[in-house]
Length: 209
Length: 209
Ligand SMILES: [Zn+2]
Ligand SMILES: [Zn+2]
Image (cartoon, rainbow over all chains, first blue to last red; front, side):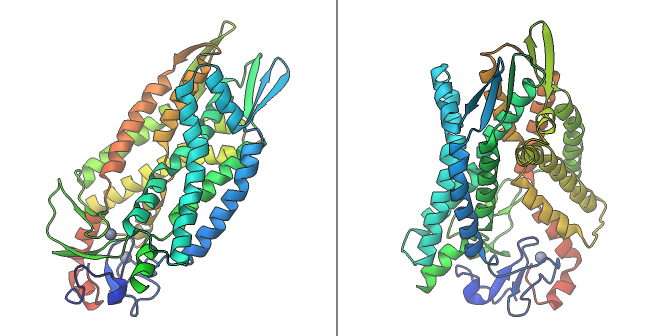
């Protein structure tokens, strides 16, 4: 087998696939659905990668609206409710003299989710319409959103810490608003969308085109 | 020589023997295609067990103590998600999963696979454990939680006298051990041993490992 694998050419051209778990190389005509070595399910490309990615990014884009419109936290102070959306939370951070924290929250809660949706949309469109964008730049963009993706959970953790700290407080209490659930779903769907997207498709279209 | 298919771009690369300090990079997209671990399985197991022992105090003991109206109230990591489990289950479950469940399961699965390699025991479901480990790495978010603690502390300084709790120091220790484990985790060593043991059988299967 190894004598057939040629250096410097893609595996799909040579009829080969690698197992994602044990990295063993086999012919996809001989083993179409499972790895012969570790018995793990295997496919040449992630199944329905583009369709799943589209479904998840469209869901995330729709959920972004309630996530930004509805309050993400509610501060109960002296019996009155003070709701805060993502944006009003950031602006009150700037007003109270915490621009550094405001920038961190702005990136984690606003820039990162939108950036993930935009980049995945761009790469998926570029594959669908066979645009001649730089393959390595598309991969680096995907790696970047894969790396920064989890940092958008930051605000959820902050809400959880703040709520717990003020839990038994008489004067103050903080709890998540309706926007928080929508925001959580935005994060989960974008995290899954990044994982289901198969970056090898970037090269498949440019080679066949 | 070892033949490797890049999982990012599908390029076939033949790489020579790689020493422990080096990694092999893909010729087309520059992604790391082969990584040796600095730690042998016993060291990895010891690190995982250490981390698992620190998990308990890090999650249960107070991270932040707040002094308000002559009452000092401590807040532990698990207090937040437990508090709004009924009012906002989506937020609570996500926070609990990313901060507690995923990190613990990840440590358990790495500890278990290291133990299997150590004692030369290869159960049939072990590839599933490797698959689980790969998936969990993306959901274990202790580093994000660390930044969230710092953001929360800066926000809380406006409201009350604040003390860092004993749980915080355990959490920092846990984060350091956890990051060392993730940075050095590689299952290539395990598969190398596995293929050496089953070399003849794999040749019959017409696979290249
Ligand atoms: Zn396999
Ligand atoms: Zn590559």
